[in-house]
Amino acid sequence: MQLLIRNIVLFSLLLLSGACKSTEMAVEPHPAPALPKSLVVETYNQKYPTTYVYTWQGEALASFSETTLNTTTNKDFVLTYNIIRNANGLMQGINYGYQGANYADGSQTWEYTYSKDNLQIRNSGNNTWTYNSVGNLLAWDYGTGTTNNLLSLEYNESNLLRKLNWREGSSLDRTNILGAFTMVENPLYLLAKKTQFLNMPYNDTFMTLACSMLIPKSYNNGSIDNFVTYDLDTQNRVSAITVKNNGIMLKKFTFGY
Image (cartoon, rainbow, N blue to C red):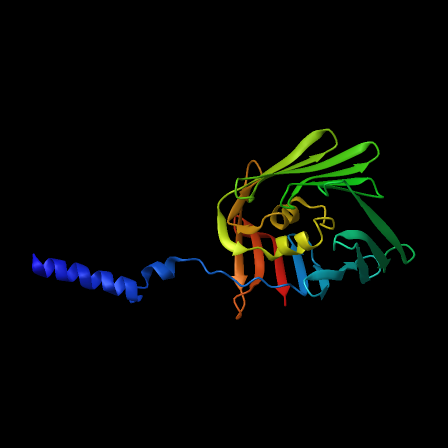
């Protein structure tokens, strides 16, 4: 009996001293949050990727560019965005220029107006964004006259994205339901949050990931499970996020720091 008690005590001491590592090995890594300087987006069945380059002023995003290949002219089509912020650091407007399209180069300015509680934003293009109390996007009403495209999102009690509803016109086009989450902070969410979700590509896969604070393990679009994986670089930062279905890459996001 004394020998049994002695063995139990020794095993407890080993656990407390960290000599038993099995629990540690099972714990998922926690990559350090970092501000990406670039993002390359590859999409299934598209030969050429889209590249984003970000310029930061401290923790605030000052400007970014978006470059794709214009296959008609075989030259780069480049969009540049310069962010204008108010005294509270919120986006007041954005100046964007474009060059390399099938029309003349030029530039435009979007201006944003806020509700009194800052939970709703409208721009001069008739778009409306609605937020919850922690600043996560609840809805994007892409109002363009007769066609009313609407994105709505639902979160769980931990403010993790649970469901994304995508509607075009009067019918519900798609619902993406997220499965379990990793414990890894999502750099796509960080980029979207830094622009208050005002400049996301109008793509349901991109938005599902960009509105998710933690990288999900999978999401279902109503009939198919799409699986999400991530890679880390040598400094323990997320270097890539990949979405696959049946082993086929649907989208891949590669980050530079």
